[in-house]
Length: 277
Image 1 (cartoon, rainbow, N blue to C red):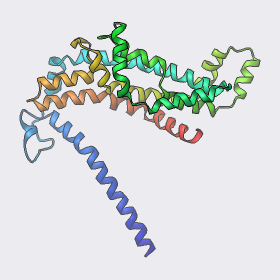
Image 2: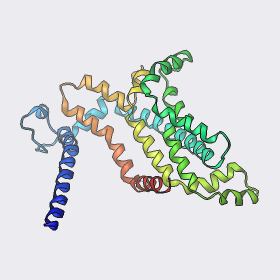
Image 3: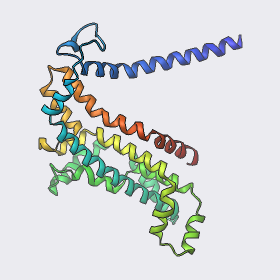
C-alpha cells in the first residue's frame, strides 16, 4: 500500500509537470509554426501545426521591411552599455558592503534594501519630469545612465558573493602592498565570475525585453529598440499574423542563443548565491 501511494504521488507529480510544460510550450510552438505559415493560416480552426509548404521568407521580409537591422543594433548598444554599467556598479557596491564593515554600513544597506519595496510605476512620472528638465528625452541616456548607478537586487547578490570569500585574501594582499582597487580587480572579482555571469544574463534579459522605458523616452522611430519596434510593427502587420510572429521569433532568438551558451554560468551563480549566502 505504501509503495502504491509512493508511485501514485510520483505519477501525479509527473502529470502536473507535463501539464505545466504543455501550458508553457504551447504558445511558443504555435508562434514558431505560425511564423513559417502562409497568409491566413494562423486563423484556421482547429490550428494546423507545421503543415507544409513552409514560408521561411517571412523572416527575410520582416527583416527587410521592418527595419529590424536598425532596431537590433539599437538594442545591442543599449543592452551592452547596461550590462557594463550594472556589472561595474553592483560589484563595486556589493564589494564595499561586504568588505568595509563600518558603523553605518549595515544601516545603509538596509535602507538600500527598503527601496526594493517602492513600485517602479510610482517613480515613472518624477523620473520622466527629471529627464525632460535635463533635455535627455529621445536619447538613450534615461535607459543607460541609471544602470551605472546600481540596482539593489544586483548589489545584494554581489554582497552575498563577496561576503562568502575570506577576509584573509584582503589582508595578505595589503601586506604585499597591493592597492585596494587592485585587490578588488585582481583577487576578489575573478573569484565571483559565476555571479557576474548571472548578473550579466539577468541584465541582458531585462534590458532586451524592456518596453516601458524605451516607449516613453524614445520618440524617433530610428532610435527604437526591438521591443518598441515590435509594437510598431504590430500596427503594420495586424492582418499578417505570420509576419508578426516572425518578428517575435527574431526578437527572442538572441535570448535563446545567450542562454544556451551561458546557462552553465547562470546555474553556477544561482547555486553559489543560494549556498554561500
